[in-house]
Picture 1 (cartoon, rainbow, N blue to C red):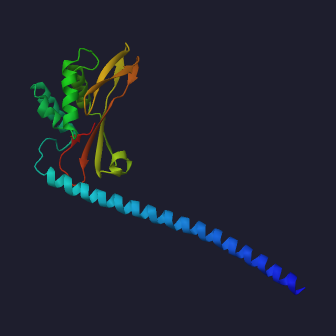
Picture 2 (tube, rainbow, N blue to C red):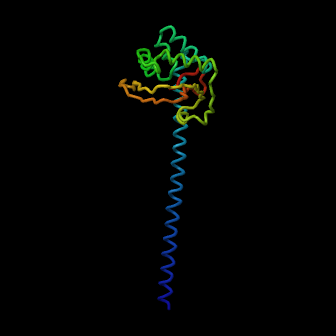
Picture 3 (cartoon, one colour):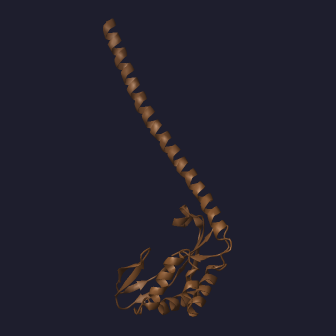
Length: 203
């Protein structure tokens, strides 16, 4: 009887140890996951601070942008009308990419995507005030870069499908993009970093 009792005690103790080990492992993983999430959050916050410090230090004298998204478009259109694509590109956060795209659009013979068609659509959208301001919490890229975002949307009707060649940075190789017949609502993003005073094109 004593032998059976000790066997039973050993079995019960083994079960307790097993359950305890499982629980420890589960809660250990939970704790480590929570710790990892906290560390990721801390790293993101630190990245925000570093990026903001870099932005304000390197862009404190940047005057290439408007106090509103509408004003940025007006400045951009004026520069294009003057034939000054280099200045027009400076209203974008991605100046080199924007200049490359503007130069290609200027040379393009495609009636849908040449520079004249693009600026005409921008002017029409500007005239109709088709801007939307979006809260920072709904902006994808402010997970990395905090600030405010606005969008300009306009209607584009394509009656004949076409293929356009889009320059892709950094080397500028051309990528064919097919656009079938249909009605589209192109979207242009604008961004003003947290604490910044000017809006720039973000795409």
